[in-house]
Length: 94
Length: 392
Image (cartoon, rainbow over all chains, first blue to last red; front, side, top):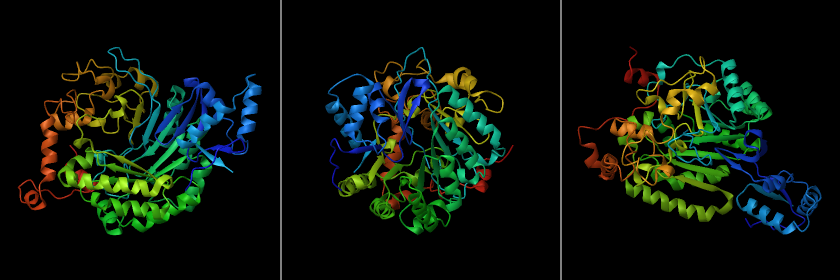
């Protein structure tokens, strides 16, 4: 199995068996998986909650730039998503 | 079906403990189990636990724990499928926002139940296998379940769950690691946890029969490494090293009372599923106390928080914030004092107890079986439980 190519047209989704949710008790998004939990920082949570398997990385980036009145986020977004795919938090839909 | 706590949470040991919430809740819904595994971590006196909590009690525990911030939920036992209200418990837990992991032997899981559990919101299933062959699986669990488990594995895939296999390793099956991994690959497993036996409950009783030799362990690790390369991303393999072969103890439960809360079938609240054995502690029961009171204010949950309870060499050890002195139950079982260092640690004055057990495991078979200490493997069953622990 080869590694998926991750580019602007890729559609990332939360990996099967993982669940992203907001935890009020921790004031953070967390990623839940069997016997574990990753507490996410603000930007990681904002990226992951947009990974629905339908939206492309280009559109996720555009949405983040709109929401946070920022520019040039693409490199940061794709770096984080690549890391998350490597850690198996995300899978790529093509 | 040992659940291994790897919840990542920062925990610094200080002399003034300030516990966070019980992030991980494990409900041992029942001690009833169709299997009779000789390595089960359930207490050997489980037959004395008769009265299980009813549905309403379990739902109340879920609500109270979730309100404190609990988010990981393990449903275990015994065999949790033995409870016919499992679907109700799962539905409530899902509605509350728990991530729900069913830890099961698969016995009792059919299409109708899995359909209902999926609809109720079950997130994840961990299926235990005893070995790769029917004979060994059935011998080790003292049942005929191998083919049934294979069918359940297929069912789990059909309902689009990740296929997660847990195989408890020990002296009698560790030489089959290659066959076990081949079987897992054939079944389409996504994850395989090769969990070396931890010696509590029935496994402690059977330790002499179950502890592998160093050579066995070494071979198994080599096989596993080769297989990892071959399977690549297709199947992830976790190998839980048996702590008897280590020189530092595991950070058991991240320290008792730090993140982990177990409720036993009769409602006893425990900081670890084996902790009931620890002497001198009165563990509270959810029938008579709320989860918040239990977690934050009961003396038994506060007892092993921080490091005031520690003895030397732990108390002055620079590593105490990393491993919390290891496992209290192991310290008690091996040394008779739960406040001692876990003797797995080579700084412990009792470390020789561990190395002696390993040295016996290294003896050739003929040297081991001739001694007067030879004991038969005792399978986990209500009858054996009652024999070992006659009711007073």
